[in-house]
Image 1 (spheres, rainbow, N blue to C red):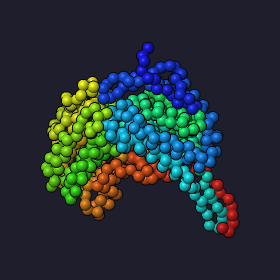
Image 2: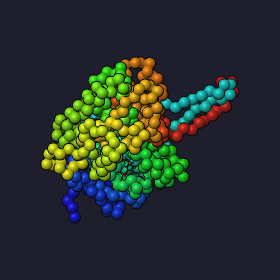
Image 3: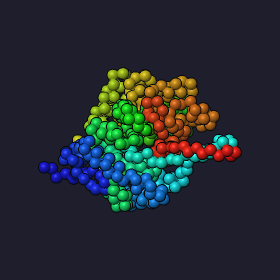
Image 4: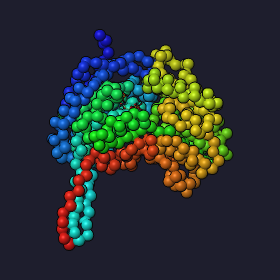
Length: 487
Ligand code: NDP
């Protein structure tokens, strides 16, 4: 029997073992070694979680919003007090640089919770006067139990992004984080207990998507499903949820264009482009993995961009000053290598990267590392330019004019986000309108205002989260119509 730390499920306010007593290995990506065990939960664990969520619903949904808000704000405060420990844990679990976990991931978790905990205090429903006849007003109540499925790339950030609005609006939750990165969700369970979240309001069941995840999505008492993950998995989730007519939000993959016009501030575009290409080892759904550069500046831009990519320090993610850590798993590393091989077969020219680094510290020699990779010379329609790789690989392609680049930008099945670098204000507005993606950034990348509708078009998603959209998603509108002659 191994001595590894065993993560527990969080059900009905207790930290509990999975019913079947089965566990999976949890591997540290930077070393390739097992460092803890995660429950391999199944439908029986989901059933217990649903029971707890069902029992907790009446009291939680009727609790005054101000009281719910106070408990959620307490959770946010406890996260803020524990940033260093949470960030280090996330780095060990996920492979991302400690500096990124500390500056972005963990602060965003408390920001998510505080945002929705306070938004609910200002949430209001609509009323409409039907001329001379009557008055309509809309009641918006929680929908019941929400099933939340989240991925590994921003583990606690994306879990809290969904859990916070669901709880703020009075729903109870059964959540399944990715089994590849379960440790911060485990710590979050303990924080929720400490903050006094009533038992059963939030339940976290760890395990595999095809088993625990599918049992959540297919459970008939779970009426709302919010999923973030890949498009192929999203399709499965949609299929499972459809026969029950569940309300479903799907936040899925991206193959986002990053467009640089000749009039752009080149230094800013290079700096922003490097972040957009390689942040979190390229494992952000919003990463700009297809760069398009106007012909006039293409040679200069390429030279400077490659020089900047080569400056990124790949190494032990726990070491300060490291820009790139490990990708999340062996499977993900193999996926990246598969696409890099495809690029080679298709005649791509490699300007840097293309393989795993060889100068890693001893601790990391079995870890899952891949160097920042810049490729040119590929057709816009090849698989590398059409499919989501989710790794530190970017392609660069020259373009002639606005019409051509709009067609290229819109030329994939995805539509999550895009970035445009230009000093021409009219062009910025035109492209904002013409590019089919849920977000269009101009002269920036990854600025996130939690109030704006967030989500993707085409194969990148269905539904929007963020601000009011999320509060609406987790509530059921009911119209009351009263005849009032003469109003
Ligand atoms: P996956 O689609 O593989 O998994 C997402 C979650 O779904 C995991 O918890 C997974 O569990 C679970 N799951 C898998 N199969 C099922 C199933 N049949 N029923 C229910 N749940 C299931 O995504 P990744 O974890 O690999 O994350 C990367 C993907 O997420 C990328 O495509 C990325 O673009 C996308 N993403 C999208 C974002 C957005 O906002 N649009 C934000 C961040 C990421 P398990 O891990 O066990 O498979």
